Length: 356
Image (tube, rainbow, N blue to C red):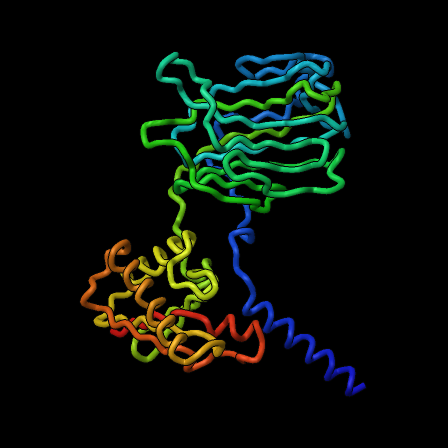
């Protein structure tokens, strides 16, 4: 019995250590809809067999149908099918959500976003690069300009609740409340979203192959708070001299490199905001490596990495250069066991000490 208890304790300790040092990503952030609803419909008042109301125009043969005691909109023939909704959403700070059921095997189902066309003065010029495209036969989910973001096996006849969220210059796609991807929002400052459409092409299409309902379009009336360092995988500690931020290698650099990854910008922007709200008389940026490689190489790499971080904070974060001291410590001061890959990954880091 004692042996079993010791085994359970060891397993729990291992699980805790793995979760404590595990990968932190944006996928853990749940969906929050806009707080001001502009238009919503679940088609409950649409009689079966009738054409749904609320859309500005359509192509094909839309029809209200009943499935699992709920009203849905579908195409009653294999012809090309599209429902258009004209609605002014501005450039960003909006959400579009809906539920879809792939009832039978088809080809492509899409959500298109539109903007105004300055030449024709029309409202339905497609926003290039951010079309949601569901390959119905294989339940493959794609986003224009990004590619495949998910595959859902066995999704036929199961509700899929999609949500598009555009905030802080980002396009985000959620499925059943979980974020699938985020990417830069391509609209220019002088462009606005003027509407959207649900589209199903006629290649391999069947009558009633896709069902749509529970549409809700909303705006956000309050600005979204920018992520904190902790949300981006940065450890923040209070110290006797001020505070210390520890940024793992995976957040900043590719293995064995000292040039910042594109995604490092978000993390270092959060660091710069933290520095501005926690004034310091001195900022010490220290780079560390694991114990693989020669001491001379690791010392140089750690110094180069510290310099890259400091340069970004100075040039892009607008932190005064006079505050900085740059240090490279190589494999010194490990915070984990260098005999394991997990431990070595923790040791490859940059520490930023704010001294009051």
